[in-house]
Amino acid sequence: MKMRTLTFILLSLFIMNQSFTRNIETDSFNAKSGDPVTVHFIQHASFYLTFKGMTIYADPVNYEGVDYKKLPKADIILITHDHYDHLDIHAIADVSTPNTKIFCNHIVYKALGTGTPLDNGDEIAFSLAPVPALTIDIMIEAVPAYNITEGREIYHPKGRDNGYILTLGGTRIYIPGDCEVMTEMSQFKDIDVAFLPINQPYTMTVDQAIRAAIVIEPAILYPIHYGDTDLTGLSVLKKDGIEVRIFKM
Image 1: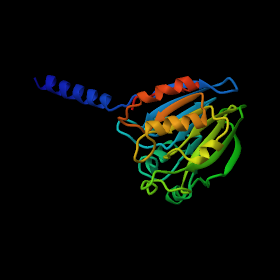
Image 2 (image 1 turned 30 degrees about the vertical axis):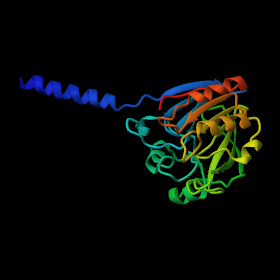
Image 3 (image 1 turned 60 degrees about the horizontal axis):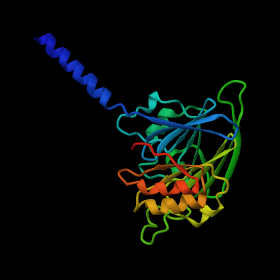
Image 4 (image 1 turned 90 degrees about the horizontal axis):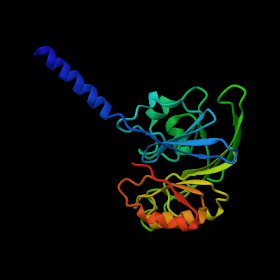
């Protein structure tokens, strides 16, 4: 009886442990170079991209069932701002190596004590060799990320936070941070893939996301940050040639 009880307890603990292992969904698209880019969606606004042996994290944050120590080490980490659901020092430490390049705004730079702080409008180009005999050219542009709705500017004031436009294999990928439909979006040229945050009052409504997508004109749109928001309205973007790909939150 004691052996059966112990076996039952161990089995229960194993099942509980498995139930807390989050399934990281993936999706992929081809860069203009012809090489695949894979999106690994973690939760909320946290995801990472893999491309030709390189790993790029956007706002890595610890969530239940996610063990960053078991995830690939980062070549690049992009951090949009210092809110708890975008900045997690422990997650960053878990995926960082001495060679990891971190890009962020100035507030995050002070919190981390490391990285490269970027202002809205800054651009940085460099090359990485994630595997021997392979060099990848990368461009990162820091763009604005702020609220425009009256009374909500306090959440993400203009000039403080960063969004990023990342160029990989000739493909331009928009990683927004928390924002609404900003006038600067009309200047984001040749965006191929866009991630858009949807959860007012902090970011966009579905209608705002539709407007933003029409301005940016990506071929592929990934909603993020949306929680239990009903995204069915995004289906209207099909007529504009925008493919909406939705991960489970």
